Length: 288
Image (cartoon, rainbow, N blue to C red; front, side, top):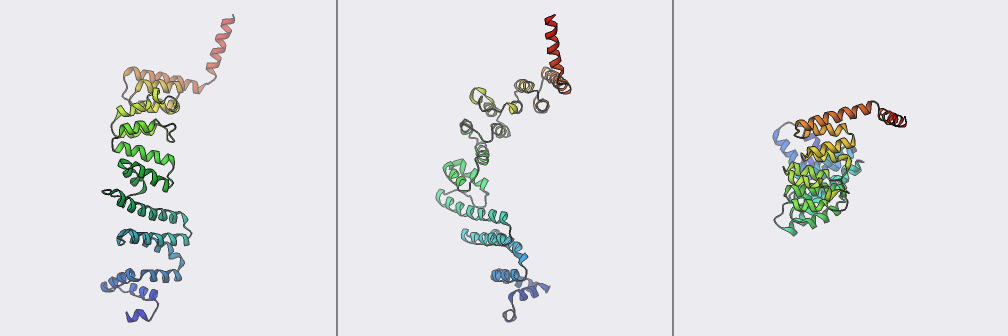
């Protein structure tokens, strides 16, 4: 330590680093732990490009040695500051958000009891809260400016995970869905609940909300083959017919209907004026 005191910290650290003996390496690690802030300052003076590397070291410290929320926040705040100095605003903002999140998680754990939120991402935190503490989830969503579209996605996945099918159905009845209604079907299908998924193609409930262009795909996902085929033919959509073939369990009648529809659509695509000529010719024959 006498040697250290007679020279700049960075010189001392770098000199130790060149030595190969294990005790000195351990000494280096201990010294960096105890005086790393001074060491980092020295490194930045020598090479400003070290800022990002040091910022990442603060993030590592947050996960390895910072045990309390306040200590973790200090590490993340230091990291964000260095990222900004390195002109990396995008990462700096992400780190700031993480620092805010761990504080909020700590507050919520103290408020709600028996809820483990630390270590979760923002999305996972919202999903966890939506299961039993929806009002707190709504507040957290606003605090972090989560968009309507993203929050709807998170919400329907949370409802599906806790098998809250009634809540999911009622949520789907809200005036306008920023993500449409196909995602509601998708989360039900992933949970092997075709009965619940079929509710979202019920035109008596959602007739003014369903996207006609996606209707064949939605019917196919819930194994309503006849409805899927008819809506695809109405749209003259080869893409939808191909999707139905790959997704639905089809009988011979269905397969024949799809084949004929594809031929007719393809014929129309190859010569779109053919039908116009047919109508025109029928009109001329009627005049005769």
